[in-house]
Amino acid sequence: MEDIEKKIKSLSKGDRIYLHPRSKKELAHFGKYQGNRYSESLKEDGILLALALSFSYEKLFGTNLWIPDRSLARITLIYPISYIRKEKILLYVGEDIGEGMRKNDNYYNYSLVSEIMKQ
Image 1 (spheres, rainbow, N blue to C red):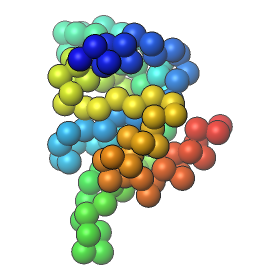
Image 2 (cartoon, one colour):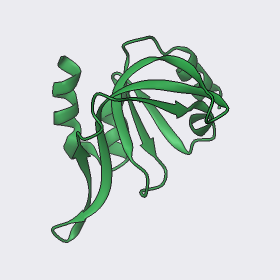
Image 3 (tube, one colour):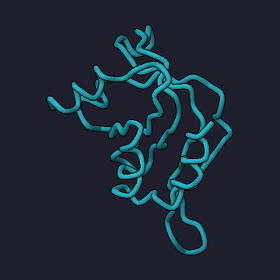
Image 4 (cartoon, helix red, strand yellow):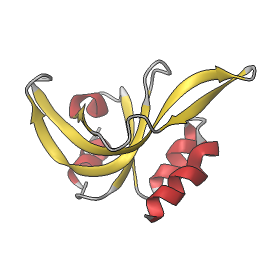
């Protein structure tokens, strides 16, 4: 829990982050951290994320894969910090993104993410 708090508090505007859900029914997200903001609808603080890519877990050609989706790109998402604290979603920052994608069976998309990170 302390590591999670440290990670949240050390975020700086512009950091590349990858949010990976524990549930494969939810989307994974990659983008740039834009700060924290209170969400009236959530009634709590959230991470403001400028999305570059989202990933959905789908069956494709007989196997399940995390499929990239740019339809949500260029929107800003407020993601509840409590979800990160409760580890409903895993937070990876900067250099840890590749390892996070590897641990969560999404590493085959890392080359795409790393190209976006160069921009």
